[in-house]
Length: 410
Image 1 (tube, rainbow, N blue to C red):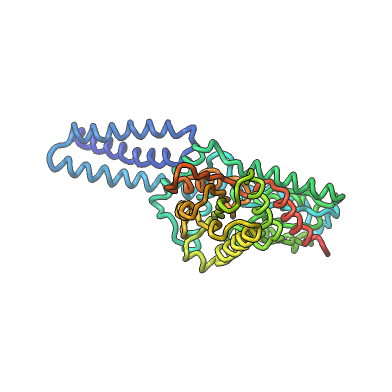
Image 2 (image 1 turned 90 degrees about the horizontal axis):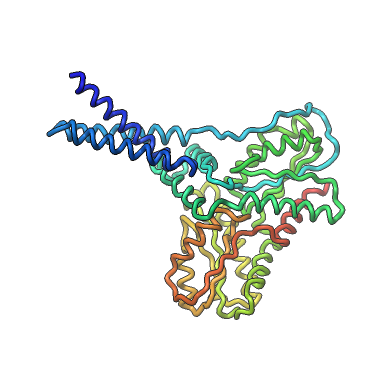
């Protein structure tokens, strides 16, 4: 009898452990994934061996069903632990007393999406939580560890995200542009929605440094849940109420003529003497599910309007209207491969493509979009050239600068 109870306890422990190790392997940092893979194989081997050696007849079937149930329970518990973990990013202490007018300078909070340089799923965990609160359907709970596994795989393939480094360079270029114009009233603070520091942390740092006015420079393409979340974090500080410090927002860049011109200039810079008549240009947007458009219709409508305006400029510049187009990375159609195949059928010899809604190189522009482009079945001689995200382009910097200057007037 003692052995009967003991083998069930061991089987249960191995089954629950296997479920836990599966989630840990799928979601952990790359340096720990091998450990969890090894532990998972040990648990699986032990579980299968125990079933095969110690159970017979209908007991074997009952034990196998119990093992699967306990494995599922272990998986669910581990997934819940990972997906409900708190965001470790904090904010600094407020060192400034309410009513302190500050030192008279203006702080620019350079605010953008953000992406960790190395794999860290907290951004997507926060996104899952936000979707759940808003009752927006996305990846089912049980499948989310697999989603994070796919994200980690993309990081491993490209060797890390350049997003933070590029935005650091972009903010430095922006500050240099103001300094060249003789403007020393501004101090710049980098902030991210999904990386360190958050925009509210940057605002508190600016207050501690004596800022008397704050401009939130929103380096995004559209008004979306991302811009709203950042604004919510900043509004929750009640800066104007407590300190008398005004906060102005630049708004996103979907209607910026300078940003639209950047795409045309970059395409021409990469022609290398090629014929415009046989060159295709594809602007790949991010995309969101149609049901999300009910909550954030501006995300789609502004992105489409922006990219269509860029296509019009390209046609005016001499590119064939048959060889320029829009595609979506996910959720919407057409997909990038479909557009590339259409261009090829119309005689295109090369395809230049952008991750048009991405402000700086990221996993999307470095991995996801090129992967989707490479799915196109086209003749071997057709070039596919990735022109990336906006990045540290002089016209991009000028577009952001222009928006900040609009908010500097009394």
